[in-house]
Image (cartoon, rainbow, N blue to C red; front, side, top):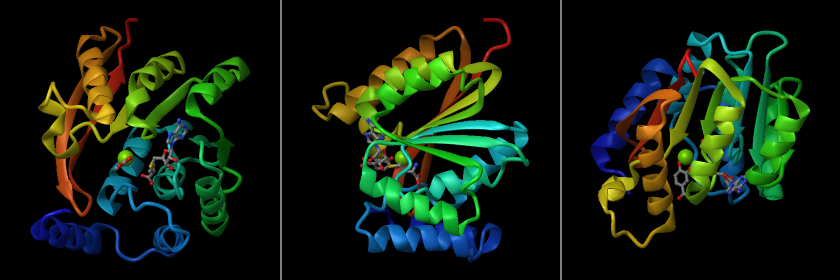
Length: 224
Ligand code: SAH
Ligand code: DHB
Ligand code: MG
């Protein structure tokens, strides 16, 4: 559970920079009503993803792990006319909630929701020539993060940005002996990210209404 002060500051920041917004708030309340886990990004983090997409002038975005579509809506709203976002979700119940949330947000034309395991959908996207994506947000099952990152490298171009959620996990990431497969998956990913010559990367710790966690951010290098 997040510390009280982190929650209070997150509401303060949300009140300042985001406020109440129908389709985003509705996505969260309908997700909760449908019994989805409340593991979406926070409002300030959602806006950060939105701003990153804007800064990159992103026209194609790929997301792994849709849940109820909260982060998806933030990202899709950054797209210009004709922009496209592909989001991948393996749980049909989550995908059904997300689809309704995209409809209410008026984003159905911009979002291509693929129901399936990311590891199966990614080669399909490559075969379709769906890339290159300007921005990739990896937020699905943590043990597979290395595989998803390798696919993200195939589906991007020099200058693209890859963001990976949940790379700190209450600081558990520094426990090399952790029996948690998510922690071990993220540790393998961080090791690979640090060594990968094709990107320049860092990771940032965060606190907020979803506790203590963090994200990694990588830019695909110009010379590959
Ligand atoms: N990005 C969302 C949160 C995603 S939670 C947000 O911030 O709003 C992680 C999601 O990944 C869950 O909905 C889960 O069902 C999905 N998931 C887990 N394993 C997956 C897999 N192998 N392939 C695709 N989706 C997966
Ligand atoms: C979990 C997954 C997430 O993507 C997240 O942001 C927080 C928690 C989880 O699986 O517990
Ligand atoms: Mg996450």
